[in-house]
Image 1 (cartoon, rainbow, N blue to C red):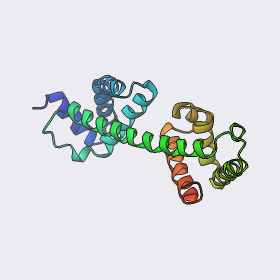
Image 2 (tube, rainbow, N blue to C red; image 1 turned 90 degrees about the horizontal axis):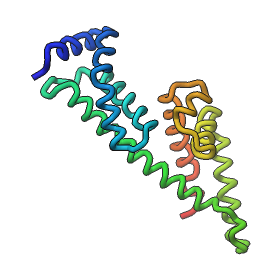
Image 3 (cartoon, rainbow, N blue to C red; image 1 turned 180 degrees about the horizontal axis):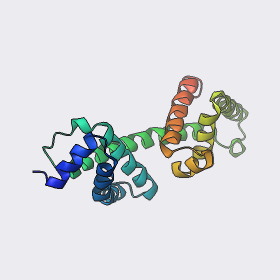
Image 4 (cartoon, rainbow, N blue to C red; image 1 turned 180 degrees about the vertical axis):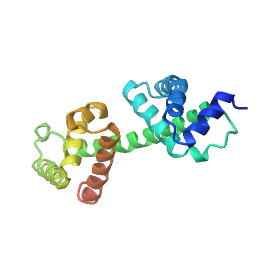
Length: 185
């Protein structure tokens, strides 16, 4: 059963009242953040997933039926966000590992064919990167080459972290599409 203040806050959220959003966030943010931090072990990722959790909750507030507490519902959303991020990270890591393998340092081998193949793969990768628009190219370079976090990238690009994550995701999809069948088996 929901508490009276929780019911009032939900009514306020459904009516778009800012104070209701603020109340729910202040009541639940620390718990959701702590939960995601324990799952990820990464404070930056935990902050991003916590923000995504609340954004998802607001976008889907009409799906909340009140069978469990609002806090429980937020934890469910947070867990799904965590699972999604693990999948996304795994896909991105696998893709980048393949690219690193394909573009390994050619000085390590004296096999001319290997050097030629690696040089060709590197050329194809750079060609694909330069076909991206400037925002997507910057996201790829900052994150995967420079090693910046999404928060740091957001500061550099003067964009919200969510926008930067979208640029990065879109850029990876475009790179994969461009390189599919052109790099390695």
